[in-house]
Image (cartoon, rainbow, N blue to C red):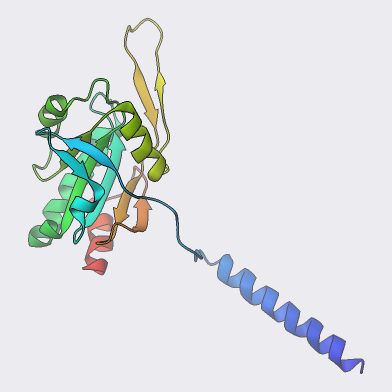
Length: 190
């Protein structure tokens, strides 16, 4: 009789240790609720929805054209990733969604993105549409006014999101990611 409680205690301890080892090994459980539908406008003025990219992976970045640092670096990383992918780059929609719709009109985005790979798709929209897209991707952004400038910056998160061919979240990369690492992650899904 006394052996049964001791046996249950041992089984419980083993299960707890096994769970702790799995969860501390860096493995995540469950699915992240990142991504979703959006209705925005591309640089030619055409309405564009997230569903338009079905069948292609999406590499999504949210920033703005007046960004002094992380946005141009990340767009350069996206450009280099597409170059590294070679012909497989056609299987990826590289998307830049502005977080500054007041200044980033389709024409402004067109001019700005001309400095990067021509396959990067620029999207803008109303304040409400941008807010909805940012919420779907769990992206932070807020206006910030440096003193004595007469202008503003947009503080924002700097994640590059990789979505699968159905628009479902796969992973994200921080601002210091190397193009080689992004290309490797994409190739694993091809």
